[in-house]
Each structure stands twice: as C-alpha cells, then as structure tokens.
Length: 120
Image (tube, rainbow, N blue to C red; front, top):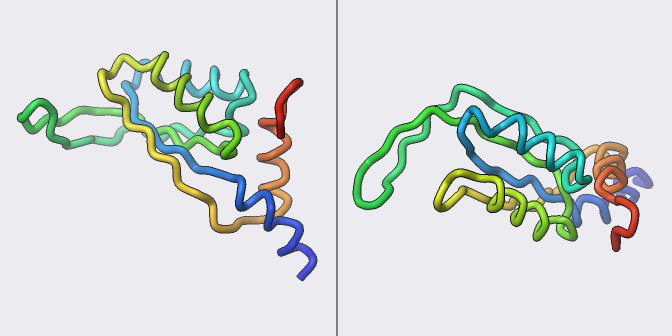
C-alpha cells in the first residue's frame, strides 16, 4: 500500500493535455514544451483524420495528435504555448486529470516539469 500512497499526490497533480495540430507543427511544438520543462513527455500520434464542423461547414483534415504529460501547475503555460505556436484560429486544448498511474512514473513526470524557479 505504501507505493499507492506515494503516487497519490503526483496523480492528483498530473494532467494529460490533448491537442491536435498540423503535421508540420507537431515536432516543433513537442520539443518546445519539453525544452521549456512544461511537459515531461509529448507523444505525437501521426496520421489521424479529424472531421469537425468549422464556420458552418464540415471539414476533414490530416493532423497530428499530441499527448502532453504535465501538471496542473504548468497547465496555464502549456495552454499559452499551444495558443502562441498554433496556426489554428481555435486550437484544441483539452486537459484530462490523471486518476492514477505507476507511482515512479508520476514522480518522474512531476520532477521533469519542475524547473529552476518553478513553484512545484
């Protein structure tokens, strides 16, 4: 049970942020988030097709889905970075709380986004 309680705090603070972007923007955005310590890890899922309604028309585009592992504390900066570096008028940004996970991984995630001067 000790390992569960050790991972409880990091799980409550961990977030999975989802965003879609153009294929050409994905690598740059992922690198920026990790380099700035805003994300511990970013997975790029290439080759997705998004179908959506935009300005009263149904659109269909090839995109890349980014799975961004971060913390609640860093979320505002993650959102700002996505908004600043996205070519989309309205980028998708969804933050999903992490209910649980391997305690060691969650500790690593929290430590990875804790930069110099970070409040975490």
